[in-house]
Image (cartoon, rainbow, N blue to C red; front, side, top):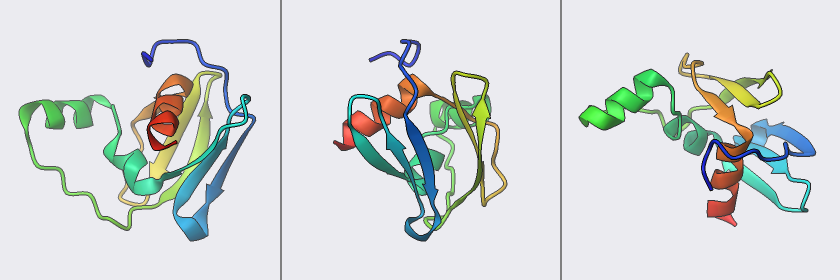
Length: 103
């Protein structure tokens, strides 16, 4: 699935602070928990993409948390991570793809 594919948004999004995860309940019944570490490592903002492309080492604390979640228009979510990172936008299709990889 391409991240540019239109995907229906989840019915419910819950930040599970005790589990350090985001729970997504999709309209087709799939429910997944994406760890905050996975979300942070999956960031596709220009800075993170450039670092991955050039092979620069990115140190990400294994205990990174999502401090807050914001709706990014109608197309996805934006996370504010405990390490100060907040630039990545996570479209519904990308979150669905991550969810399917875990199911």
